[in-house]
Length: 132
Image (cartoon, rainbow, N blue to C red; front, side, top):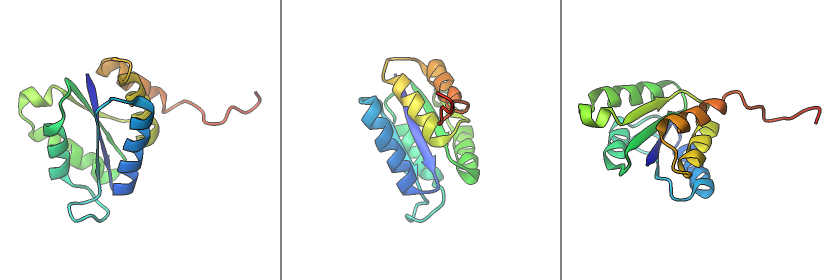
């Protein structure tokens, strides 16, 4: 089973994206880590670590929005014990669209590779279908 950790500078963005994924994907484990430890804008490495350690899944995909969210997630993953680290992947896709696509794919029982592939496709999927 694949779980998602959503790391954003904004608590509202992380929680809203998690809500969207849960609504469409159902039973997929999704943890939002938004804002800094004091509730402001920023990132929270301790929150990222707690989310990873609390995840009850075989594989963990981490989605990040911008800048220090990526840096914080990379730093946390680098510090993980090897048996945990091998379960974790950072996913370089658009935050909302990538998490959504991966979550829906995970809800079908797909593995991490398939979920990442779906998330990567979200990068190039047009939103407007002009000419149709």
